[in-house]
Each structure stands twice: as structure tokens, then as C-alpha cells.
Image (cartoon, rainbow, N blue to C red):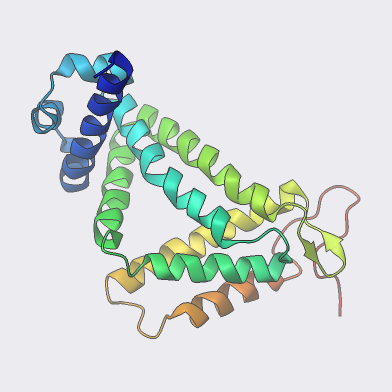
Length: 213
């Protein structure tokens, strides 16, 4: 095995171990247990990630990257804005039924717990999530709605609103608190949100989406 292959194997082992321990223990997660599960030493963490916080941030990036890659595949370039929002919503609802949904929710909750106890980690996690979310913003930017193309600023505001909607709904589905929230419900809610004329603040000298009836 080459040095690069060994490095990647160790990195993967630490990320997998961190997912299990952090999902369970949150800010109480012990680095010693993580490296023990990975069959490595704390030195490997500092060599590969710089710190425990660096490992946690890398864990979030590693967890989100395939999620956003799948979103890109689920939303073809030829769709207009509302069609793209519909496809995004249906993808998000399907993700609630995967075997990984419950562990993913556990990770979300424990990461919030960690962020509340460590302001520096909170800012690093936010930066990591925003960097990944830029893929969604890019997916919406330029899509047609009521004869106009969505600007990047409008797409950012829309992505923020959709994230809040989908996170809340998906938590309800996974926890059994959102009865009847099927794919169509997700799609209808997302379309209604994206159709609102005042949902996204217009850029300077740019008419709002939707306009007046």
C-alpha cells in the first residue's frame, strides 16, 4: 500500500469512527475513543485534521458532500425554477426513508449541541455547511421564473428558506410527527414557498420574483 493509500485509509477510518462516536455523544465525544475505534492514535488525528474540531468539520463535509452531489443529479439543468424546487423537495423526502436517515438526524442534533458549547467550532461548522450549500445556490441561479432569471442573491435566500423547510419537515417524518408528509406534500410546500412574490428580496434595480397579479 502506498503512503497516499495509507493516508486515505486512516482518514476514512477516523471519519467513520467519528461519525459513530459524535452521533452518540455530541460535545462529550472523546478523541481517545474515536482513535481506538479507528485502530489509530491521536497523532493521526492531528496529522490529518489538525485537531478534534478539524476532524468534526471534516466529518460534516464528508457527510454532506454525497448529499449535495445527489441533489445536483436529481435536478436537471433544463428545469425552470419551480420544477427544480419540486425535484429538490422530492429528493429530500426520499432521503427520509433511507436506512441512514435516523443516524443522520442523530448527527445533526449532536452537532447543534456541540456548536452551542464551542463558538469556534460553531463558526467552522457554519462555514463548512455554507460552502456545501453553495452547490444548491448554483443549481437555482439563472433558472427561469415568471419570465425572469433568478439571481445568485435570490437563489441564496431561496436556498436558506428551503433548507429550513426541509430540515423541519424531515425531522418530523423521521420522528413520526409529520403524518401524511409524503413526496407530494414536500413538493407542494416547497412550490408554495418558492412562488411567493415576497419570498426573496430583489437585488438593486431588479424586480421581485412573481410580481403582482
